[in-house]
Amino acid sequence: MTKKLSISSFTPVSGQSAPDAIVRRLTDAITSGDLRPGDKLPREDELAKSLGVAPMTLRNALASLREFGLVVTTRGRFGGSFVASDVSERLMEAARTSSMTAQELRDLTDWRRAISGEACYLAAERGTPCDFELIQRAAVEFLRCAADLGQRRMADASLHTLIAEASRSADLLREEIQIQEKLNILILSQPTPSLAKDTPSMRHDTLISAIISRNPEGARKEMLAHVESTYNWTSSMSKAYRK
Ligand SMILES: [Zn+2]
Image (cartoon, rainbow, N blue to C red; front, side):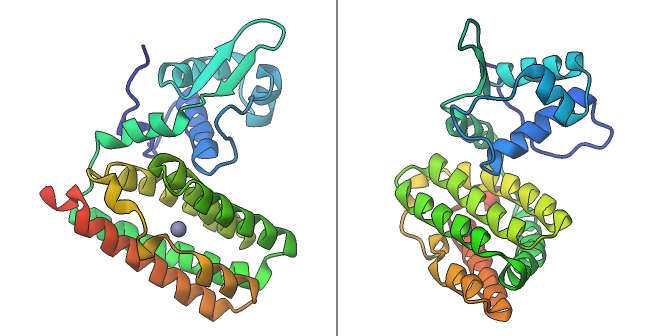
């Protein structure tokens, strides 16, 4: 039996304990697609070292992640800690219990305009051919899992995170990851996921071609349109207005 992941697990809390901070960082890594379902986590001593925490602190954090059902640990020769294969369902389940007010949705959209719009501008300016290749691959992956809302959300988060990464701004990247987490909550809590299919907000082709053709102004414009159509789509069918 796994514990329910609460909304507070997604929300940055000031003065959070070290295990909470690690849970957050690992949840971030899962949200942004750095860690995928079934991925093996590094050995505990290596992971503790790379996160700059004591092994005991890491063990506590892993115990929480296991409780939430995000990580599975197995014993034996091929044992270790793995990202749960149903991690997107787990995150979806967590999202279902939450809702956003109309004002919060507008605030999120405005924040996203500033961060993702600028990240997109800079990605067109500073991105490398390797970044562009990864972005294109992520777009293909997004289309591949179009039928599954949970998987598609993860693929979309991963695509937007890669764009922010191509901006070469660590601060924009950090904020983009936070935005994507909020979008997980928003999109995965939609009461009618079937309506999510084939929406214009889910298209990325013009956005990506503006980035790749190194058209910063055009890329920002496309991103703002993408952000606004996500806003229109979610606010039209969201329970955001229930409150
Ligand atoms: Zn998108």
